[in-house]
Structures are given as structure tokens and as C-alpha cells.
Image 1 (cartoon, one colour):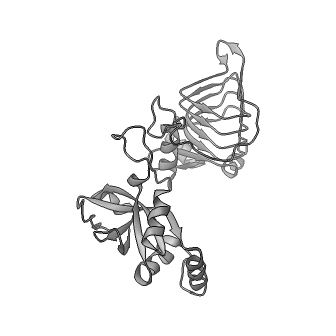
Image 2 (tube, helix red, strand yellow; image 1 turned 60 degrees about the vertical axis):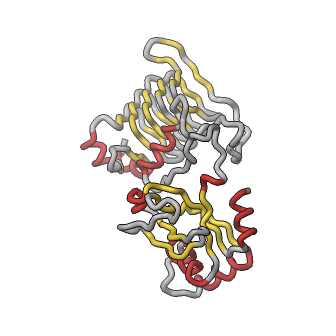
Image 3 (cartoon, rainbow, N blue to C red; image 1 turned 120 degrees about the horizontal axis):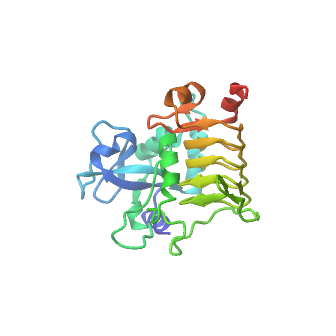
Length: 278
């Protein structure tokens, strides 16, 4: 609401949502160079020396990839860009820099509109453009008091929710106990004699007996066979994990079979599983 109000009041062609970050941490972002009224006077992609904010020179304004446009103006820009043979068809690389030079672009500071449970809490936003960042942002939600509280009634998360049965945990024997600790398990999941710790499980998963999962992010409709051991893994949608598969214990073997990130997070897709011939 605050961002929309600023956009209308300023009669801007585009308003860009921005996050204040320490200046030298902004080298991996698109950075807005603004004047004292937050008019964008330049857009710099991943600068070595990010421009500071006039009122906070030790900070820079990093683009969040959130934009508000005048509808007619946006359609004009899309048609113009479509006619440019050298365009990469990217908002951050092509559309926004052009508007900064030829239109009216303003920056909206996310801290002005972010609802927080206390004034001391920082405005929450994460760039999840890498496997490491995506895994970390999801696993953070399993903390006792995460920075992003999905249960905060002052900032409800509105999303599409299918009508699914609740998660189900079955079997209660030594070594075969369906359980989840410090984890988020979505609807339509069945944890059948498997153990989950600090993991986030999307809808429709079936996790079979004697398997152990730790710090796993699992997308929808994944099937995990018996006796699997998975640690620090992101599993793609619809993957069928073979019985007895071990991921996350041997980094050299993992690198041969899966995609391993800089921080050692394994990305597992069905194509990768198929190549194992299991």
C-alpha cells in the first residue's frame, strides 16, 4: 500500500522496491543511485563501488526486483524493447535502465512499508537466486523464532492453498518411527516410519520407513524410498529417491552424481537420479 501510494503521489513511470544494504555488500545486486528525494538517477548492475544513499552514505539501495508501473507506460516499454534486436528481454538489464534515462523512476525503500512485529526487527527480504540462498532461506523457517514468521498475523502470507488432507505420521517402533523435529511438513504428506530433522517438506511427499532426512528442502510430490539418508539437500519437484540412496555424507561422490553448491548443498533432480541407473 505504501509503495503504491508513493508511486501515485510522485506520478512516477516506475517505482522500484529497494532494500538498504551495507554499501560494500551491494556489489552482487543491481543498485539504485538516487538523489535526496529518492529519484533514481542511475541504475548500476553489480558495481564494484556501489553508490551510497545521500542520507546514509554507508548504505546502498539494492533492487528487490519488485516494480510498480503505469500500465500504459509499461505496455509501451515492452513493445519498444521487443523491437530492439540487441535486448536481452530483462527488466533489470534493459527496461529499468532505459526508463531511468528517459522517464521518471523512483525508489521505494522497503523498510517504509514492511510490517514488523517490533520496531527493532529488520525488514525481511532474501535474494534466492542461488541454490545456497534458496536452501538457507527455507531452512531458516524451521528455527524456533525465524526472521520471517509464517505465523505472524500482522503480516499474513497470502498464497494459493489446495484443499489437501493433513500431514500424516505413522509407525512407532525403535528405528521406524514417523517423526519430525524442528520441521515444516505440508499437507498431503505421509511420513511412514521415517525421521525428519530441521527440514521443510512441500505437499504430496511420501517418505518411507527407516529413512532419515536432515536439513532437507523437498519440493512437491517427492517419493523417498526406504533406508535413504539425505542431508543438506534440495530435492526437485516429483523426484523419486531410490531405496538406500545416501546424499550428503560423501562430498566427492555427491559431486560426481549431483550438483553441489559452493556451500556443499546438493541439488537433486529426476534427470540426475535416472543417470544413476538404480
